[in-house]
Image (cartoon, rainbow, N blue to C red; front, side, top):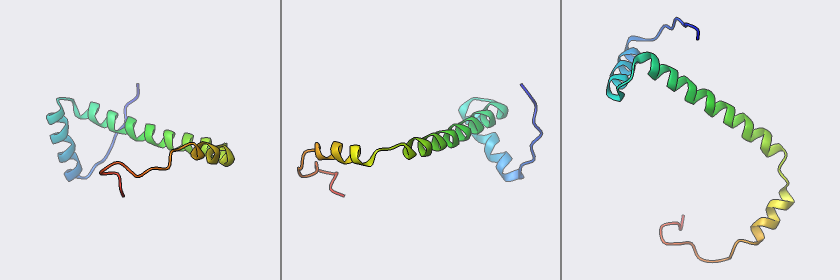
Length: 78
C-alpha cells in the first residue's frame, strides 16, 4: 500500500469528514472507496466501448425482430 498526500479545498474536506462519520468509516476509507468506484466506472466504460466495437448490428436486428409488438405496460409509456 502506498501513501498519497492530497490537497483539498476546506469545503470538500468538511463534506468528506461529515459523510465518512455518517457512514461510520475513516476519511481514508471513504476516499479509497470513492476513488475505487470512479476507477471501476472508467474501466467499465472503456470495456463497454471496446465491446461495442465488436457488435454485430445484423444480429441485433434479428434479435429485436423476436420482441413481441404490444402496448407498453402502464407506467412504461414514455
